[in-house]
Amino acid sequence: MSFTSYPPSQHAVVARGVEKSFGHLPVLRGIDLTVEYGNVCCILGPSGSGKSTFLRCMNHLERIEKGLLQVGGETVGYREHHGKLYEMKKSEVARQRADIGMVFQGFNLFPHMTVLENIIEAPMHVKKVRKAQATSDAMNLLAKVGLTAKANAYPRTLSGGQQQRVAIARALAMKPKLMLFDEPTSALDPELVGEVLSVMRSLASEGMTMIVVTHELGFAREVSDKVVFMDNGIVVEQGSPHEFFNNTQNERAKAFLGKVL
Image (cartoon, rainbow, N blue to C red; front, side):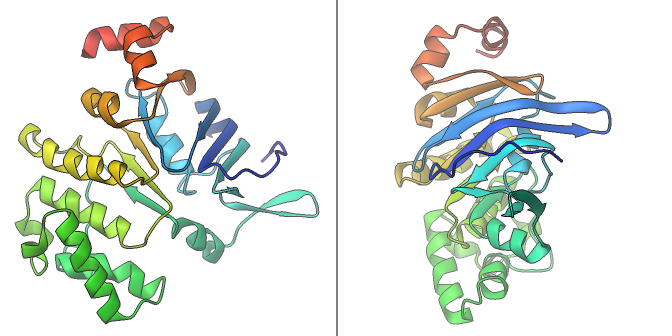
């Protein structure tokens, strides 16, 4: 793969010319984006525009093929040696991922584990946190997401909204520097969406750096610091929520908003 050399950055996320294809199908065709620490960036766009693929590239679930992608000043998935970039070993990638929490459309909880066991698993085995401390931290997180009473329940007994809140708590248990949300409410019944968005609003108010792929335009308008609109694998417009929702300049973005607002 080819990369362009850029100076190191202490932005939360820096993407420059990011490209990714699946076979002969280009999915990302030169993504440029910067996200500051403490900010919430919401990524909007039609299905198939590359939003989820871009998010997955940020923790090396997908490998980029060209460009630069950094999280916290580190090139994602690659290390430099004598002026060339080499893909990291699995252990090195795991270290990077430990600082990046990700919440998926599906909840991805371990069905054979209780809620508490789901949350303490990664801190104990990845960060070597002692069980007593991991349990204490997990109970604090369950209080944050309003599910203290469900600590000993199994995922199958929870509603979709409750499972997604557990998934958020599980990601937060690793104390990440960045949280990625890939359409976290898309699999939920409408009446359950609000409880998940409420937790996300709380995280935003506490200064968590978040990148959210979403169709929840109200959330994007109210909570985000930056709105990004993607179409056909590129960023076609970005700006503040006020700029985007009230004065968007791109015709494709205008057409999108006209259909969904």
